[in-house]
Image (cartoon, rainbow, N blue to C red; front, side, top):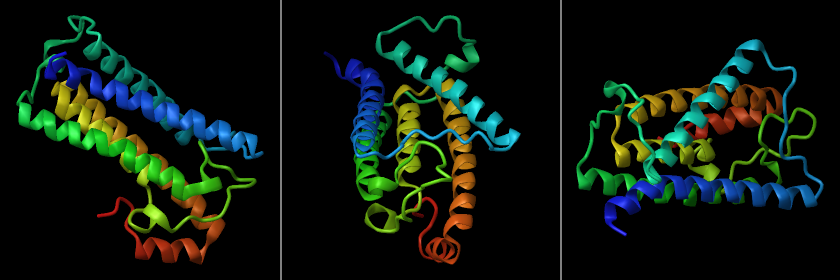
Length: 204
């Protein structure tokens, strides 16, 4: 298999690996009696819209990953979206390095979170506030891991559509982060606010 084909498959393989980790971790926590998948039925309409748009954009992004890997035809895309802004091997290799770092950060974050990890906001039993491990360096390492994977995907495939989807996904994740931080501030009060003063949102 050529290097180009390996790079074409890499984003999809890394994404699938991260999803498998999520599934295995969720099953392990379920066996311990911890509810992982939580749907907040009382969230405001704006949050529902944000979540719905995120799902649509994410599925489109995943479809494009599969299209690049298999490969499937992207002739239906407008030329302006399928145009390759980046096609240098050096840039693709930087993307590959970032992409391989993403699941490492993701797994480290899951390990640090312990039983506090949730998919959604758990208002009934959210678990303790986590400030150690990788969370001592950044407040949102799981989202940073996904941001790295999304940016890396653009660097590897280089198309305008991947850049636009990257910008959309990062913005939508940021909205979710702000929502979760408001909940944590309400739940943990001064302890969370002190943590926010000590550790940057994205580790910068």
